[in-house]
Length: 197
Image (cartoon, rainbow, N blue to C red; front, side):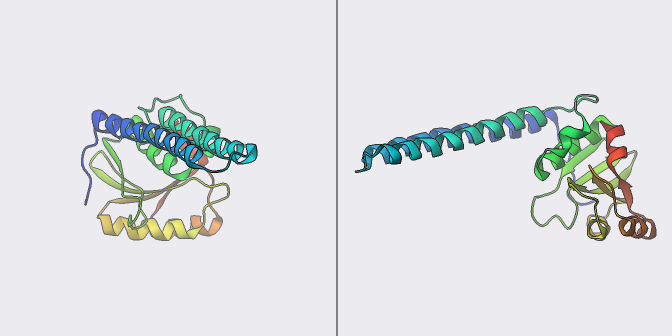
């Protein structure tokens, strides 16, 4: 299997810390920019000042929210610590990263995210009992269609894995189920994911 290396706790913690530090630095840089704009601006109108401070405050709240989500969802996953409804409200990248932790908590020796771009239809590469898995994650609000099945099937071949899987917080369309049966793609739907939690 291509491009799978052991991802340990300290590497993951360093990555989490780096993301948090980057948000804190972004907040500080944006505060410096706000002060610079206000001090160098010729406008002393209260509307301009209020708009500038209000915009910065909204950006600050966004960064604090992202830091909270990183700390909440990117630690070491423990079974029983999350509900399926919490996964419904995640963004796709958070879902993919958390899925690695969920797999490891359920007996996978390795689970690693592929690069965000150029992943060939595979979001996670994993190993369990000597079997290699190419997994595509779909955090959707509606049933998953055939595109996901086609992509992970092709990605499985590219990464030279034994098993192709689509993991979702939803269900699959009947066409997706038929195609998965024909191609041998494993489907882990909402009920399957609930059991992993």
